[in-house]
Amino acid sequence: MTLRSTTDFLLYQWLNAESLNQRERFADHSRETFDAVFDTCERIAREKYAPFNRTVDTQEPHFDGEKVILPQATHDAQKAYAASGMLSAAQDYEIGGMQLPYTVEAAANAFFAMASVSIGSGMLTTGNANLLMKHGTALQQEVFAKHEFSGRFSGTMCLSEPQAGSSLSDVVTKATPDGTDFESDPLGPRYRIKGNKMWISSGEHELTDNIIHLVLAKIPGPDGKLIPGTRGISLFIVPKKLVNEKAELTGVRNDVALAGLNHKLGWRGTTNTLLNFGEGKYPVNGEAGAIGYLVGKPHEGLRCMFHMMNEARIGVGMAATMLGMAGYEASLDYAKNRPQGRPVGIGGKDAAKPQVRIIEHADVKRMLLAQKAYCEGALALELYCARLVDEQHTGTPDAADDARMLLEVLTPIAKSWPSEWCLEANSLAIQVHGGYGYTRDFPVEQYWRDNRLNMIHEGTHGIQGMDLLGRKVLMEGGRGLALLAGRINAAIERAIQMPELAQYANDLGKALQHVGSATKAAWATGQPSDALANAVPYMQAFGHTVLAWIWLDVSLAVLAADGAKSTPATVGRLGAAQYFYRYELPKIGAWLKVVETRDQTCAELPEEAF
Image 1 (cartoon, rainbow, N blue to C red):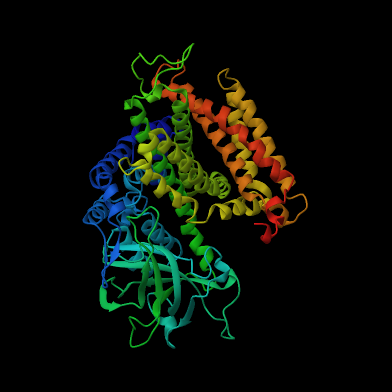
Image 2: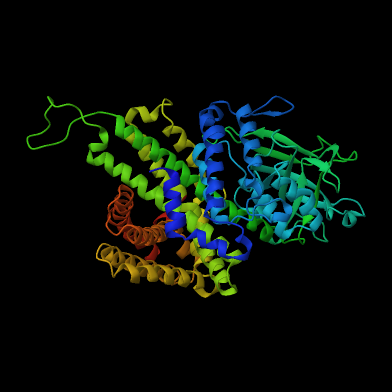
């Protein structure tokens, strides 16, 4: 099965995405317009991305002393992506958007992620611009966001610092008012930014006319000192090149300097940078300090930035999913064509018989089926979350608020689960290839290298676990967890009536109950140190329970569409669901045991014992 047929089934047979055109915002659309978008994106991905995936891996970005040099293929791909309109796919018609549902936008971007996640598309630029459309002034939207949507400018997010890493409380980049008239600048209160930012994707390049950095920094208090913790953080627009109120380049370079390029294990087609803000390399008006314009109110920068980060986390989950899918399709093709060995029969193997293709061996089928269960399940999860985004934006008030709460609980899973298990799928894809998989003669080693990043960026695995168990399942009195349990139980009630799915329904019910009791047990002492010591095993069990529900719900749609189970696609989807319930769901018992006993093995082991 192709990605397109899988996506079509999930969108139209399972999520009923076509019904979104009954809403006023999407009234001009139909399945035909959705399919036309997919056709365009599939073509661009096939022509401009896929053929150059190895090129951008081997021809890493380099700095010639003046500019960062990228392969021509990257320039061509980015131009084709911008020309497709996908940067503003979900935006209003008035600003050049297509008013597409986010569900369709997410599905369309899957084609690019599968063809070459390393080239990248527009996740950061779109997220940057979306943030400004929500929190920026009208002029900030006009000057910066709209030109990002058109592809003329690109965007970044600048959070991490060398000394702080993921701990945003320790941010020390400073923002001080620029002159006595700093509040009267039409582009926003104007500040001088000084500090260093690390791990900035697409932080320096020549792909667009300008790069719009969104930078977290602290405004000193009345005593001249930075406010400790995250309370003091504000958000600023810091363009690489200064512009006027008409978005015209002024010819003045802002004081943002490339300090170095990071040389990565994978995802090598995208520049990753260390940036120095305000070091004086490019003084503005004779003074060191990068010009930055305040977004929103002072000290509310993290709240604004989380709008972009949550979007990025679903995008990371989709990237991880599609890298897993690319490996699955490559290893499936290899397994169908590689002859090796003979079937095991009574009395052993008959060496006189011809070799069989390796897909005929049970253990190779196991590895392929695991990949299918992980990757197609993850794709369904990401599209489900995208559908919740549309519900939050265009549903009735009650439905929108439910969608908001469900997204709070599911976003850590949407980011972390594919990052872990589609990476495992890539590992299995290498294993299917045997020794060849460990060479650069086949693409599966690159897929694994590219995917290894996804457990790290946009909130590490450990941070996602603490976010889930420490915040999301507790917020608003546990309402998000209760809403999720309600949806899971609704699927269980439907499935338990069907002989093919009744056992799965029972197994899922027990798993859900176990997650609920483990959540309470983790917090029984009320001590975060007790509960969060095993936050990642909790997240793993929670994620597997969510994916079991996804597979059960998808199976209900499969049987509704093909009750006779007569097509290979149906047999394959039901087989993947069976694999997940028999091989994967039982793992949650081991994960939850350490959670519910608040096991301190890891937390209490003294440093010297290592």
